[in-house]
Length: 208
Image (cartoon, rainbow, N blue to C red):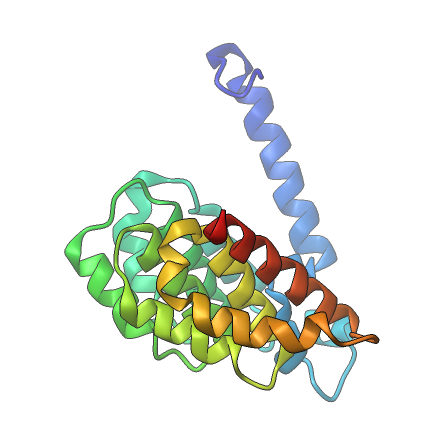
């Protein structure tokens, strides 16, 4: 891995800039979580929406995504949790989850974000809080989305519970209740299959 080699730094920066230019030129939709794409682009094709600068402010969203993994970005990420664009808020929450340690102001901002109208944002906020040791309120949000009527939202919640490992133990009961009917379903949809697999893996880890 030559990424940390000072001699290769100019080449690394050139490659990063070429990639960034390509992302912006092609209006890459990969910076939207699936739950956002489903609701944001109703009434038109994703291609059309991707080229609508108001509907998809890619430059601003990309700036938030590029901060993930940068320890010095924590204050900016906290501020971005209040951004008007839900995709910016989403990447801010993802970035805070990746921080090695969260300040109390960051935790407080994440707790407020548990009420975000965007399912993707509040799910990532819940995951960030659980990863940092904050508990029940975050689990309550994940269980509520787990039990909702949108399978894409439930899948994101299930995957988050899978990733937090033992921290999901207090909500094993609701997880089992949601999973059991799917285990008996002979013709699940693709979303239900992914959901079942994520929740099964989470429970297997907790029960072994």
